[in-house]
Length: 232
Image (cartoon, rainbow, N blue to C red; front, top):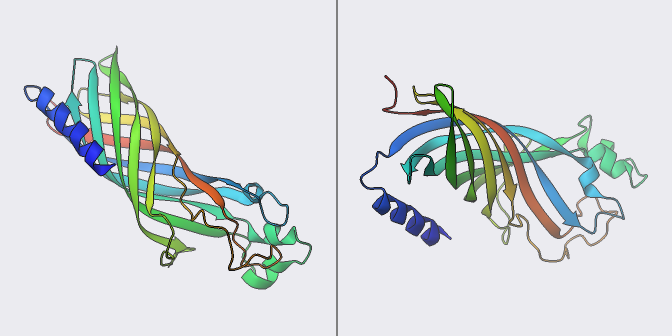
C-alpha cells in the first residue's frame, strides 16, 4: 500500500515538474465514530450505545497541479479518532445493572486511537468570486500510533490491526491569499479489531466480553488550511 502511494506521487511530480507545487499546513476539528458489524452482545445491538467523539487532526500538505483545474493533494496528518460507549445502558440491557457497579458514577467511556494518516486526493476547482470552490476525492491509509481509554494510555493487544485505510471526500473554498476552508468525510474500509472469534470471554453475560466482528472508522470534520507562497 505504501509503495503504491509513493509511486503515484512520484509519477505526478514527474508529470508536473514544470508546474508550481504548493506546500501548506492544515488543522481540523473532527467528529468520529465507528460502524460495527457483529452478532452483538446477548442479542443486543451494540451500535445502539455508541456515540460520536470529538477530536482533531493537523499536519502538512502539498498541491501538485495537473491542469489549471485539476491537482493531486497528498497530506501527512496526525489524527485522533474514537467513539464513546454508554456502558451503563449497555449492561443495563442484561437486567443486572452491571454498568453502575463496574464504572461507579461514570455513564460512558471514551475510546481514542491516534493515527499517522496519509490521504491523497484528486482536487477539482471551479472559479467562484475571487477564489475557487474545490471538490476532492481519494483514498487514505493510516497507522495507529497509540490508544487511550478516558485519557489513560492503553497498549495494543497482540493481533489487533494497526493499519486503517478507506476513502475520503471534501468540499471547500480557497482564496487567492492561500487560505482554504473545507469540510470532509472519511469512510474507513479496514477492520480495526481482530476478526478472530472471541474465546477469552465467550459468555455474553460477562462484562469483559468483546464481540468479534467488523469495526470501521467514520469521521467528519472542518478544516482550516494555508498554502505558502500564494499571498500577495
